[in-house]
Image 1: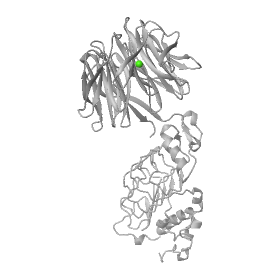
Image 2: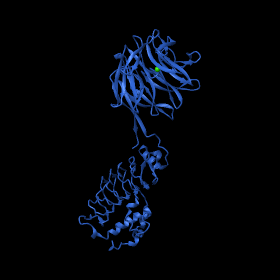
Image 3: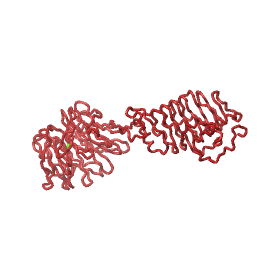
Image 4: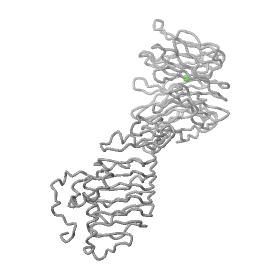
Length: 587
Ligand SMILES: [Ca+2]
């Protein structure tokens, strides 16, 4: 540069490495301008485009319709302003690998595509100001890992003063300063993690954009809180309730930015009445009571195929319930049948099948409708709710050799369902009946029996009752076939109704919880089954999704391999397995 008027060897200032970023930028611009004095040094193959001014180290174009395709070997800066092109694409500047400064201000850019800046290992300053950007591609800035960013726009006016002084600040690679400005565009949102590679980013300018501060901006909000870079205020232009607010100030967005859905995962080609599940030695099993095929189907989760496969079939006669219970690390399945009595099968690990273990004494059972197994203290029990007029719901107790009838509970009431629960720390049993309101038994420690304690008034004709908890509060779901099914909450000493849900041929209103979201599935024989979702503010369930199941009889939660499923039995069609999936509403 010795022949140039811009030669300023005295300018080798000792501040190199400590120079403020603003000055470095100007140094680069100065070099660009001064280099214009030396066209003779350009390599032969390069011809400066007509809209540009070129030197061996810089090109400045005004009003170009494209990016120069050929550039000098040693080019360090490229400026294109007032250009008419609307997008920059992958590796568009890769033929200028020595670039340190790239300025693309005041063009008509609407898009910066993936990997646009790949092949620019030395790029330190990048300006994309005053374009029409609405977004950038997710990987637009990929490859700029070592770069940092600085924004000092007000110094532009003072360019010439600093130009000569800092001309020698050319060796800026070592400074690792990167200037990133996306200011004054029309950016509404940025793709998630667009800045993730920019570990050395010091400052980011996003002013003058119109961000939509909804779930799509959630990652940016989180990133703003975690980044070490200084970032300008990100102002929200929408949605309405966020207008004019700073995204930086937000603690959280209104909703979790997550939605969920239930999608059909698998269909089991069998009608069924009830489903139960158990885990044994790291495997998850499902038992399905299939009266039409006279079997208790045992499925096992296949960790490889990621579906449920047939494991065993326990055959019987009009099987209505297959209840599993694990006692002293042995698995038993209580098989309740309409005919031929009820039996208990025991899992034989070596043979990988269930073998008959015991006949249950059923002289007082005429029409089993439900089985519940539970533990009081260290003792195991199960209860069969009998729905025949002549039947008698019966409690059975485990005595190390098998289950034996222990207490007759409820005569002549056509019980539909039994539910075991802890109420204020004490064991209780609720029996729902066709002929009276649900009754509550309390376990008496002194008598070692269930004692009738009371009933739940105004709840005639309940076909199923289930308890559930949301944040320490205890609730009951009461299924009624026609009319309204009810949700009740346990208050001081009694249950009170908090919600009624319209039932159209409902045999089951089943609560369940996946990933801290509380659902209620209401089966219907006459229309779609309805899944409700708990609203934590309103403290009631809202309609969430409709699913079609023919004559649903039960909904059973099965979770395995961090996946959540709900089995819906059908009295007239296939047993459907729905998977609960998370939908991320953020970008
Ligand atoms: Ca039950």
